[in-house]
Length: 184
Image 1: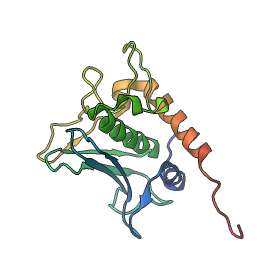
Image 2 (image 1 turned 135 degrees about the vertical axis):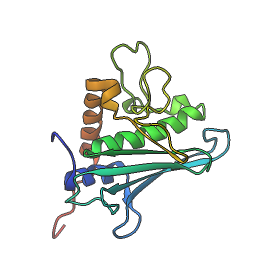
Image 3 (image 1 turned 90 degrees about the horizontal axis):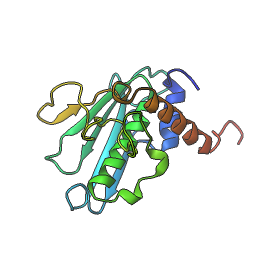
């Protein structure tokens, strides 16, 4: 697998995972809904991914920018940027998992969307973007009025995160239908 997955390869991963372009030239988007949400009322969280210039990622994309926003207006958006699409797939998994855990739906966490890390015994990590102590979103700078910028999961979980992320991306790509070529 590539050292950094961006450009066409990165877009292929994000699309195989379930992201879709919401309109020509706009960002890629994916939403997660839960009838109980994180506060016992229905909630939808949308994750939008753009390239560094704010458009839809494409074969020339070298860096991605993601924003995840809740339908609950008082919940701050989470923001993360990376040169590797695998990190954005991991963010979408973390957002969905946080929604499930917040709703008390721990049994719905897919095992393949969690991982183990050294020094954390008996607990599967369901949010790679959480801190190692409390599982809250790990921030890289003080939160703003409407959003928080997330810390790179490698800083928190190191090789355990990278190994899980890479294996999860391989599984997503392996399960994706073959691309349609000319004449197919």
